[in-house]
Image (cartoon, rainbow, N blue to C red):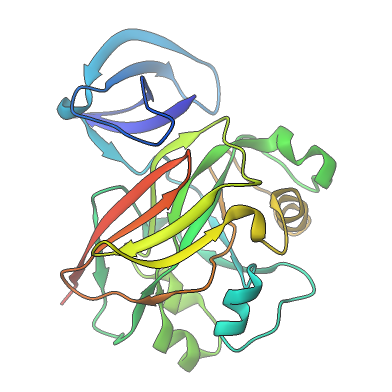
Length: 263
């Protein structure tokens, strides 16, 4: 099932996306079926539907926190001049960095080198702590596409990543959450203005999804809707005003955002 969060008129609600092709497509005529309740709790079909053209897709979730994982693809660790860590390298992005599909990534005046990072995002479905890797699937609600936008010059200057990865609009998520997605073998790519920048497979990660959930929950309690970004492959590069950035994960979806200067 694919769950989205939409604005329909003045109301923001959750809905299920109907009749998607295996490949991700959504058209103006695609049906969205509204649900009563919250997808992380009790919910039921509302009984009403709308055409996709009549609603606005929003970020599928507003998490209490986003846990990023650094250097989780060997080729990306190499291009960044670092070694693969012995255990998952964690950092946090604020919930205020989240935007949805179609929203603009705003480049802050403080940075002269913002970069894209295509990532698979895990969406947590229940309160959890100290989850053993063999039970990781029990706490996953689903998966979505993410873009861990980073001010690379500030990341290097600061020596830590809070400012570089924490700006408003620096965490695009979407376009929906797929509750049945198989993370072990899916192509992941990023294009800028239609040009391929990143191309890899989600199965190429150093630490897989069960390992990440076990590691993160050994440190902090995760809440329903929290997100773990699983790392980015090689090919990260600059984005500037006027660009269109698209993160595509096979059988999951495409997350597209424009780029503007914040001023």
